[in-house]
Image 1 (spheres, rainbow, N blue to C red):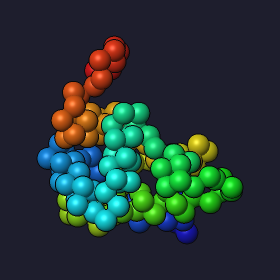
Image 2 (image 1 turned 180 degrees about the horizontal axis):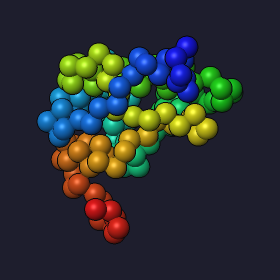
Image 3 (image 1 turned 90 degrees about the vertical axis):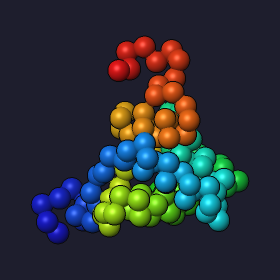
Image 4 (image 1 turned 180 degrees about the vertical axis):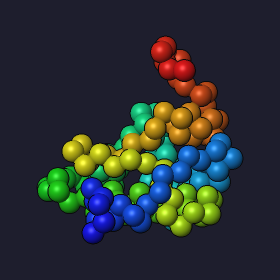
Length: 132
């Protein structure tokens, strides 16, 4: 293992997607076999900058029995990551940060702005004072 916090850290590179790239990710999500789930994840990121493993499980009608089992959520996020890699051309691309304590995948502020606009929404929601 290199001098990384996580043994697989060198397999990922954070990318900031443009509005056009997010539109392509959205199109891939809409055309995927599990489009409702993938669009739920993208809308969760657009609405609150995060989506948790528990909320993905709830969408899938699963009641979590073991919080350390993140396989249900990570499978869905993995599909979106594949879309991100396809549109960015970067085989290591990832658009999120993993919060291991909360068990959620989060987007940064500017990623969220671009995603919201790609979904046809305003850059930030009304009442978002203090958000530049």
